[in-house]
Amino acid sequence: MTTTPFEKAALGLSGLAALTIGAFILFAPRSFYASYGIALGDDASLLSELRAPGAGLAGFGLVMLVGIWRQPMLLPAIVSALTVFIAFPVGRLVGIAVDGMPSGSLVGALVFELLIAALCLAAFRQRLRPAAQRHTPARTPN
Image 1 (cartoon, one colour):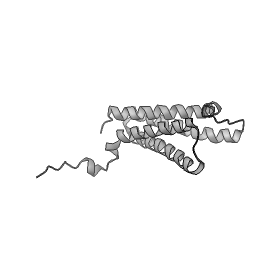
Image 2 (image 1 turned 180 degrees about the vertical axis):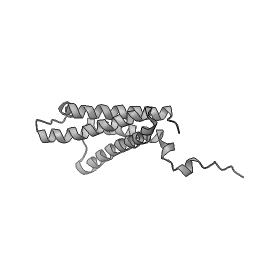
Image 3 (image 1 turned 90 degrees about the vertical axis):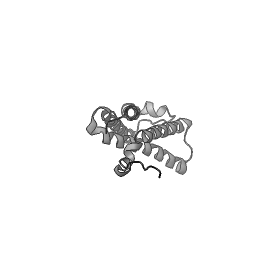
Image 4 (image 1 turned 45 degrees about the horizontal axis):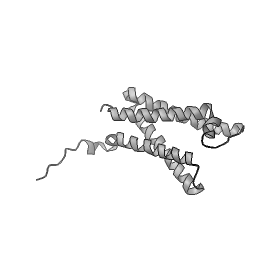
């Protein structure tokens, strides 16, 4: 199955978002979190704990982008996009349930993540269906 333009667009948007956000966290965590009203200070342990998942997020973004052009990387790219952009909102929703409502900018991030998750689910819906359902001919009414 070839990659559709819609799938490429979904991977492109999700990959650019993940790569950009991850790289920003990796290389400028104080600035990134300050944009959400969070002051990190100079705690090397905290900064290390934030940079590590930032690098992981950037790596997943690269996988998503490579999947646009390299067919063997398409499945890992789709899995990465769905995992990142479903897991992040789930984590934020758990945080809201447990800790209360965060700042408006973090709620905005949640909305952005939910929109990308919806885009990815719509783009990859055909690939998410079991193979038996994809290849079953439509029944005609009697």
